[in-house]
Image: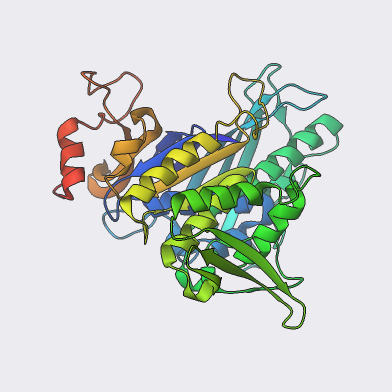
Length: 406
């Protein structure tokens, strides 16, 4: 589980830091940096597991455009990320905390085209006994197709196991910006087993979750629970089936309602498909990062969905105990500009993103900042926090759909 992210130089972020609990909703108006934060998580997780080129292809924008633009139109030449992760306890070892720091640079390596390279990185334990996992010796600019974390030495077996587990945690980061057209499509038999960021391959993803989690007492695995939750959220739906068609060589979804059966996904509502995809991601392990779940969803159903998500990440029966006081196997991060969030999500599980102005050598630049909500009758300024907390008057304007002046 990722417990903290720090970003400097990526898109709209300048010395940005955010602690990540198991459940968090990021709210703010349009163009406040919410989507950029999803891209930042996706970029650094993919670079760590599949390499820089794959990371660029997974996010919005070209390679040079990922570097923050200053107020005078120039771009910075470096992007710094830090991730802090909690690795859950295993039979042979207790839980442990690690910090991965990586510095990307825009450069022209000798004999190569310009592009993003890795200038330096560091992997250090935050749990006793403190130690730093060494990098491999020699020149180590990451070649195409090789992950950044592959550059840490695996000569010492326990270190190699830690790197492997961190890579696994980052592989389980799934960012979703769902599109109706992708959600409606069938999957190919033998095709990808995971749903992509737009919702493509949802039928195969559900089939995979069913087979991976099935048992004698639960033949559908978590898909049985997904069905139960979907029916509770969408009263027009009474069931759905995963249909494998050997003749057509595809897998598709069929829904049933109290009035009809055999309703193909092509004719299901956008909101129904969106909630099904979100439920599938929430019932999988790892970190689900979900953009604007309110699209196509009735406000009351959004309230129920967010309440359910909060329960799923803290469900003792489903999550793996981390060695702390609460289970942390499932993590859910949402972005939203819906005021409904303020009605159902506790203040400690909400962070507010907006834009502010910073001075860089006398040049004014617009950057994203994140702030916590002010506690009832609590102070606006809190020691250790860079920015003032969000006041009730600011939240009232957000509820009313009134944007702050630039």
